[in-house]
Length: 367
Image (cartoon, rainbow, N blue to C red):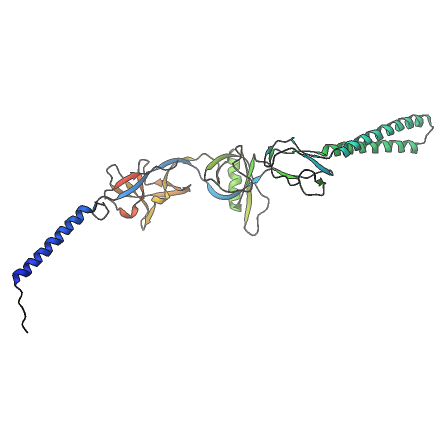
């Protein structure tokens, strides 16, 4: 079998042709692909930075609390009769003294007239017996019976007036009245279900539990300060700061939880706090002092402690170790290690190290 010998010149030409094709293809790849700066030596990394905030921060602690009504009333009829009128709209606000229900009044007006007539009759009889008693024509026992009958008639008249008065139900407090539980035309009596419920909305009471040790702190702070401030995180996420009208504790410790309830009455003029709601609250007894705050997403830690990465005016990254204080909302108080003018990296920390240059974008934060 013969083997054909390939010339070395042909091999060399094919190798050169392949190299040229590869080089041309790599050139086209570089032209068609856009440049993407990365942290791997192909450009400065992109990071997001935030300015530090300064706010008044006081010593405070977060509690889970429930909003309660200071006053609430179940409307229950005091007399029997058919429900004739409903004088409010379900869910409306009623003021103390407003007429809200009318129960059938004809019977009670008739009872009142009958009681007045009976009293008039017995008053005449009493006056006649009194004259006869003075002249000695009736005995003491007969005159006492006339006086007793008159007193009973007076009491019957008072009761008739009271029943007629109770046939009109008046709102005993101001607040929101709920759904009507008995509709017009139904027979009601003191033994039937309640007619409606009124809940006072201003002020409201914030109730939460503390340990016995915290209870003494609250009492001591109450003695030292005239005012207590309550920051309430509403279900919408908004924070409402209100002045506590009154702060007091319960009189028994729960044996199962070893806690005692604390109650704070606060203003609720805008009616944003609804009894029954669970809210987060912060209690403080002063307006606090101005403190520097750092976002928690900017914090990192190693064996040397907690640090943040900052960016200077030349876009150079600096690692700064800091000392932290209390948590405030979604941030943390900085006791030392940062200046108010520092900008901290909040996104892109995995791409940076101390001393490198970055391309920062400033992100505004909620005030």
